[in-house]
Figure 1: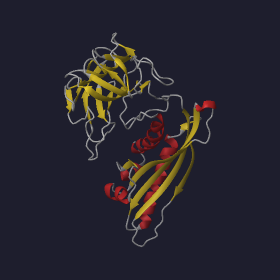
Figure 2 (figure 1 turned 135 degrees about the vertical axis):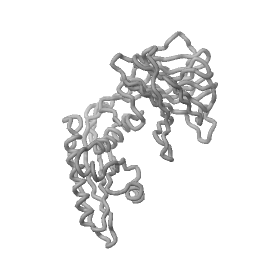
Figure 3 (figure 1 turned 90 degrees about the vertical axis):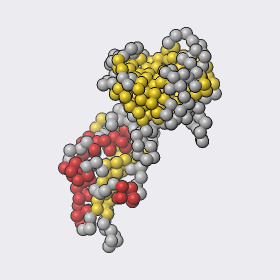
Figure 4 (figure 1 turned 30 degrees about the vertical axis):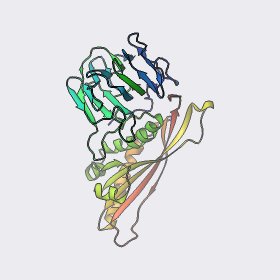
Length: 361
């Protein structure tokens, strides 16, 4: 997993408004391919009907890894094969197409893959527009995520994947040439082929959860230090669930859980708040087990030492932009005679200078 970098953002963002006149700063307008006028604002969405419209973002020759997100609803179901989204990086092309039903979407490249359990007309219980995330990388690998979910509640992959076909028309496209679709949101970036765990639609969430919390997880997973590599191994997770059942039963100790707990911004650096200093509190839990608590304690301390050394040398190194500014550690101790679990806690504070103006108004 490759988390978006600090200077990566969405090149183009629509929130149901005219693609030719997007709202917001640093927000690139879309170009209409053809002259159809069959598009207009309808409630919270940009509605494309009649003979349809296709809108384009220019993709440069060096833009090889692309992501586009769209939230859609069918008002009139488009015919089978109607292209809704497409990415073409000049080498490979991938398309999202209608399959002519209200429940199916196709990913079409070198081969075709279909998902058939969707609610494109929003008739289900508590319906929301279908959110599609399409990615294409320089090698032609393509993924289509639904509702920005990587795995469902049962842990199964909630996406389909394929390989792009040959390039035919370089660019990033959305729209429909028949049927009637409401386009609630369309986001595009040329900075990377980002999964839902790598770049969020919200810059704040990307900076807080992904670039900070998930990035720490990825760095520790890639560490070559002895205890982390040989004792902990793959038992390094983001701490969505810190219950005893999750930390001990589901993940066998020794384990590492990382949590972004708090974010604050003491001062905005400029008038109108275009730049801020933001502080991120990252907590690392090192869990060990042993009938001899002394051994569990010492193993946990050894692992925590490697965690600190790895993060001190690999994160917060961009002075004036991204800095590790403080830390504290709490070393567990045995209180109950039956206690066999030791949890050491490392608390790190990072300060980052954040550009606030890449956000939609």
